[in-house]
Amino acid sequence: MKNSIKKFAIISLFGAISGVLMFFDFPLPIAPSFMKMDLSELPVMVGGFLLGPIASVVIAVIKVAIKFVLKGTSTMFLGELANLIGSIMYALPASIIYIKLKNKRRAIIGLTVGTILSSLACTMCNALFLFPLYMNVFHMSEETIIGMCKAIFPFIDSMTKVMFLSVFPFNIVKFGITSIITYIFYKRISKIIKKVID
Image (cartoon, rainbow, N blue to C red):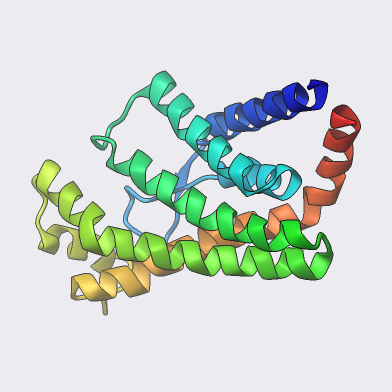
């Protein structure tokens, strides 16, 4: 019972930290300015590695809820939805792979799979409904989006190229950086948290 309470408290704490980290975002030079990089996935992944796949999903939900409560939405919930999808597709498969056999090899495999799957999922979601909804809500044309990306990469001249030469690389970089940080610092963090749980 005490362990369950402690785990719930840690999940809540990780969710809160993750939500706060969402405020410290910044654009990357390979994507349109409305796509922002942050390190809010770090507590989601650490929580998933430490407490399991379900914990990672709960932390991701708490993260988005906290951001929404404290700041609201400037994208009609589309940004928050995209963030949640990316978080779950990143941490869930990675933590499933790692939790079965906790070693460095499984951590690397899990983080790699999570990075690739989340990047593909985010690209597909953006292509199929998030970008179309975003353009409809904010009355933007495809040409406007293409123009924003063309200013970065002159050879981008279609929405297909926007997705595969801007959106996909953006997510690879975003989740890849988080994976590297997770791999470097996870063991140190986990030792501290395990002492609290035990």
